[in-house]
Image (cartoon, rainbow, N blue to C red; front, side):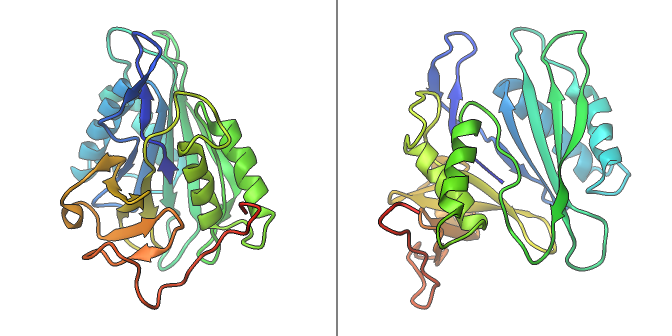
Length: 255
């Protein structure tokens, strides 16, 4: 799951430098989250939610609609006082099974009004299995542009796989094809392997080491996994390409 790192001021409506996360991983369960909309409320909600998960307050199994619905009943899911707007939380996890299993994604949506309630919907009924990666869902200000770009790249020789989704995100962050001033910054990535917990992925984007969209001078302390803007895996110690790393190339057309 990925996001850009630029936010929007509720007071001015202008783009602002985002110093918080848009994507979150659970350190004790195989679950990952991403948000769009009211970033202040969303960040507060997810931080409290992850604490509740770690304390095992939520008892149902991961990767189920019931668990997503439980999230929405927690006190931290109540809108903060003051200016609020629409909030969308994406919740992804492996379904309950031993060994590699399908990936399920749920959309938790709140209209941002005092009398409104949460809706929980599963996204992509054909879940991703352990042998496939593909685009599932895109939202937010640049969602449409990202979806169109990803489909265009997937028509090339790379196909519909994780790196085409990443290339599309990087294009959007760089202002291609969306010209919106409220998208940009650096990519934020969290990955979920076939087993185990979520992991932050560092991105050496245009030569700058970033984790959760923030520049870092101590990369090894924040992420064990690193890629560059071409989705080539990097050595986490040196942040250089492995000598035998698989190289991904885009054609002259950009695909």
